[in-house]
Amino acid sequence: MEGREILLPRAIFQKILDHCRSLRPEEACGLVAADGSGRPVAVLPVTNSLHSPVRYQMDPREQFDAMKRIRREGWSLFAIFHSHPLSEPAPSPTDIRQAFYPEAYMIIVGLEKEPAVARGFVVQEGEVAERLLRVVEDPLP
Amino acid sequence: MSVVVRIPTPLRKLTGNQGEVREEGKTVREILDGLESHYPGIRERLTDEAGELRRFINIYLNEEDIRFAEGLDTTVKAGDEVSIIPAIAGGSR
Image (tube, rainbow over all chains, first blue to last red; front, side):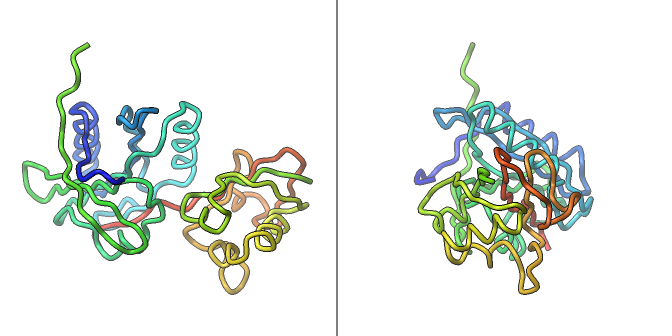
């Protein structure tokens, strides 16, 4: 969390975008897991149980299962993402008030215009700091 | 009955940075009583003035959400695992 940049492999970034676009106009949400070296390795979409264009709440059972999977795989919670289908990708007062996972980056995907814009933030005890979100090409096999 | 309680990151300031603690009790409510006695201040983060679970807090006993069991009166047995899981929520409005 100390770094100034959030590095996202392109495949991870694309999965987040695809998921958010597929659920537009509803807000979409999910988790990003990192491996032991802190590199993002998996996107775990979770159902927005509110099915709303302006609010989201992760389905509690799916959230629990996704977090358990992260623990069992030896991963860590890297980021929590959600989309703003109708507005800018910046944390709203609701996003800040309900941010209970300060260890994870908050990634917000703005779908108001194309191309979609994703931004990353650290939200800790009501304080928001933006981190440059940089998409990196996947390493060659 | 000794159970393992998983503590989420935002509450670890209250548990001396421990992500897992052991507590004794026969119900989830007694487990929370035990937590409060060892880590004062934690209960108000989990339950409201009426003693009910806060809206954005989910508690799982092993694999089950206690809201779908007996709530805070759900009985626990030795070796059970209690997970405190804050909801993930937000939105543009």
